[in-house]
Image 1 (tube, rainbow, N blue to C red):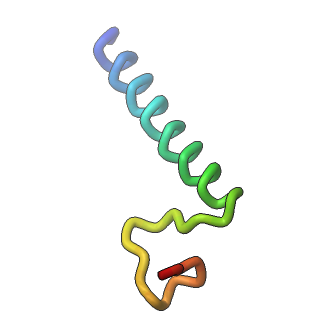
Image 2 (image 1 turned 120 degrees about the vertical axis):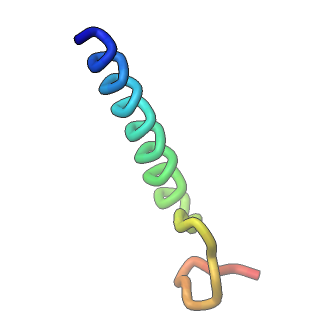
Length: 45
């Protein structure tokens, strides 16, 4: 039972960190996708 709680907490922490980074990048106008290409509206050379 304790192991499941630790795994759940770890997953929540990782997901929160990913969401925080994504929101932070979008707020400053950077692209937050995995691989930018020319079809991305935030693409800059």
